[in-house]
Length: 368
Image 1: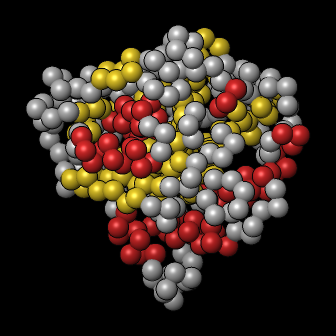
Image 2 (image 1 turned 30 degrees about the vertical axis):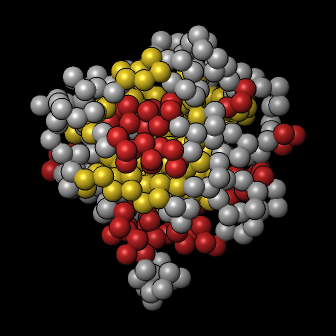
């Protein structure tokens, strides 16, 4: 699959216009943001390959939920709509995001900061407190991309403001998530709310993220396995803890890439290796909160060095990409959308395929 990725003369369509191939439907998309316990997603950061800082992620969900890729300019007025102490801001940086009626769950800004929202069943944001500064979970990632250029800036702001993240409900399911951030320097942070308290793992060493249990327990569990200090062999299930170990092992074993093209292909190989296959969904287990199938619906790779955002649907044989530097982020440029759910497949460089669009909706926070 390395032949599908690249940049410069390696791109399939250097003109910047999306190519169209076939009539396969591009995507059945979904949001781990809204998943019940047992759902999945994975994120892997590769910053020591000598060429590119790359972050790959899988988005897994029980059913399709179409999203779009949106270009959001500087100067947008944002309101988290969480009551008397809601957070309001004007976007300082333009961003490319995966947006839906639930909000932003993945994306990269023009400064090279990227973020990913993943499911964490044990997340505990605490009871809504109208006296505290707050924003809804649907705005949590967007706030970071709008305001900060680095992980360190975002972490410092989170600690200083001590704001509250307010969850919401979608399709009867309460959102329960944690957040991963990385930047073009290779810095990383995994941010969780546990027992109503903010927990941040900040540093380049925090490269892997899946789902439950909390991050500290995932790191402790990893030490039981080869080659991380333990004697257990590589685990094989699709459980979040097993995917965490496998992703870490695959990352350690990646060879040094000989080109940027190879680097992107190798990080895709890791996240594909911890993907979940399609299988029948057990609605009874879903309602009971038991582990169940949540297939991988799409994948992204954020190239933070060259500022290229790769996207791959599991329902399409094609990879598409967007050059963030090619997008118009000037104040007043308006929201623009790349339609990835059309009747034809996209392929190659789609930086020129964005069109004027209405803003997407955001999950309503529960203020009770």
